[in-house]
Length: 557
Image 1 (cartoon, rainbow, N blue to C red):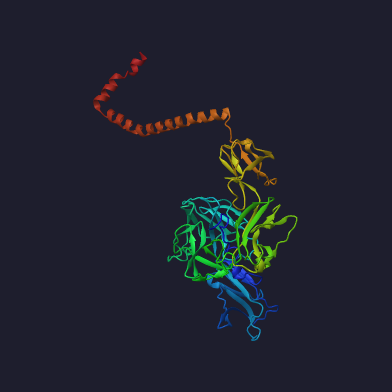
Image 2 (image 1 turned 45 degrees about the vertical axis):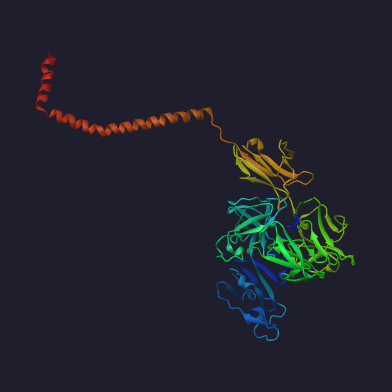
């Protein structure tokens, strides 16, 4: 059964199988990459080749520049540039002198890996929540890597952690995507979530290539239903065991099952002898089961209480493993190893007991405690026992992400009185929902009536809310850096301004009315004149008018 924290298999982030090392380069699909010629004194006869194995022999195929997607620059010591990287470009490359028949491509080979960026979804500790991770199929060589998150295609935030900052509940209409800074045009296909239950959750991908087992065009969306729990079931049948990878919801063709034997990749087991001393585990896509022994008394196994831990800088954390040894061989060697995400070529580092780092053993549990956590503690931690100590394992351990706190304002750091402003105490990975937060304004704690959460809503915001905000988690001393909120005042109308506006509202309509009336009068006046003239043409009317007028003599008299 998959424990609450045994929820993640970080194969995208920690791809040991690929052999990423000093002579390997991992670049994003669709990007460009430069491969530098390893020869100390390159000659004009230098050429680039791909290297492949055929009948246990190395075969070299020369690469020819086309001036578009593939370019070779003699001026830059025969550096080859490959643009618009594709999956087919994944290969081993070398630069060699074509005239050197004996020493071709000796010691200067470069392994090029092409990374596929995607949003992975993992069940979280809450029954109806999941966590998101921006994952690449190999650790990107370019450093430092900064991840950008998008919600409904809109920019949300960026951070050095590949984990999305919050736990997600079912929101079919909301899509999430991510990209690597500098390659924003190469976003991972969008995902949306639906049907989050205590047993299953459904992920819809915008691109069909995310559902490799489904026969559909790459540009069409597809959906996969994932289980929250995965476990190995043993069934004894006529002197052997039959193993099944069972899940908490019905299995579909879209669910890819992977098997591990003694923590190493293995084809699906058919018949396992009842006397086998081996351990087995399975995974559905990236969700891993616990290890199961065929003979509990005679094999060794290692499981983890939590496979993903998000912890605050300055706090303490316990990384717990559960193990078993053969009853006749109690292992004296119990070791924790650390793998740094940012430097995959450095390999594993054996962890030693210090003032800050302690080990505790209790029954069949071994606990690694790290106090006063620092950002540099972010890594993968692997526990090994007995003869397994120091050996490579295909299975991942526990990934620890150490995060600080940061205040963010929405919609902006500069707002106007009357707006609604939401402050978020942001982290680089999703903390549990039961955290209590304390908010500060100008270094003074805010006395809020409700239980304080990571969100502080100012609605409506006023000038009194302006100032420097910070936050911290209760029980921890370290708080976030202060961030200023600027609140601009609304323009207040003076009495004179109000009078002017009222007058304008009266005068303007009146003026328009009088203008329209004058216009109408000027249009009608020619018709009146014509009518009068026609009346004057009448002889009787002329006569009457003349007889009615006084004569000049009458006036004199």
